[in-house]
Length: 362
Image 1 (cartoon, rainbow, N blue to C red):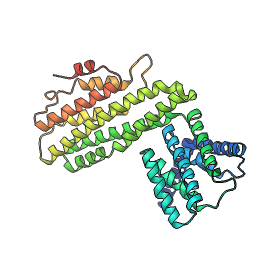
Image 2: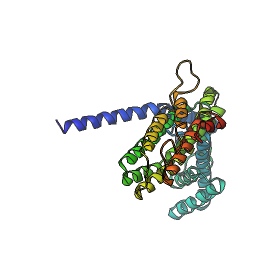
Image 3: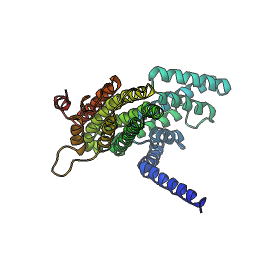
Image 4: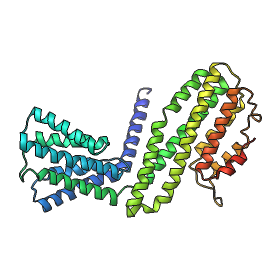
């Protein structure tokens, strides 16, 4: 029984995770299938190609199953595919095929791609497609056949990415919810380390906080992708206001996270040197964590501001060193950083700076 239960739980989690991945990528999968069919049909009709494989390859490589595939990413991949195929075709006609030819074409394709753009996707795809050209048998239709196929596939992928994108705000919302929950957990754990006066626990929280930048950057990239899609796609322009709101929220949470790291570093140092930190700081951190968790909650009926704004304003008036009994230098620094965190989060909700600073005790 004890062995079966964990296996059952693991199986359920795997099924649930797989189902979530399926839900999150079915539109991208469908786009790849439709795009490959369209590219195949167009290449046969336009260039009289009997087996336009590279047209399908270009579509699938460019679109993939990434959420909010930005047009720049699709354009990079499409350029890399076409550059690689064109370069490989030209080299094969001049120097033939073989091991040293593959070495030469990979180096040349990557150098040209790096010259054209700094994107790693473009560079990798240029080298990969050039290698395919050298390694695969010649295709009927002449030296330009594969390049025309690849160009057709890249054009189809770009059109699909621009005209039929998935809902970009879904990914933005998911990243916002995940990161705010992570930041709230950090504040709760930091509060516990203050209560227990455990420098080891505080140091562990600090290391976790320092490792959050990748998630913050991914959130920012998702917001940029959503704005780009909504600017270029007629079907997605209705969500631009939400994307702009998310952009402001992400910028505010980014600043708040940086100030949180500074506060946690001071907490760790203070506990390591046995400096005095009032327990009231732990209570403030816990209140702040609760406010962060409610950042994405909509306003109550009849209200214009979300509940987190009222909670942050209520917390702001308590953030005075004397009010919290901060007598040591470290405690004062921590209070100052927490004040900055609250200011950042209020401004992320559009609260004017002058109103925010009026709330803070002098």
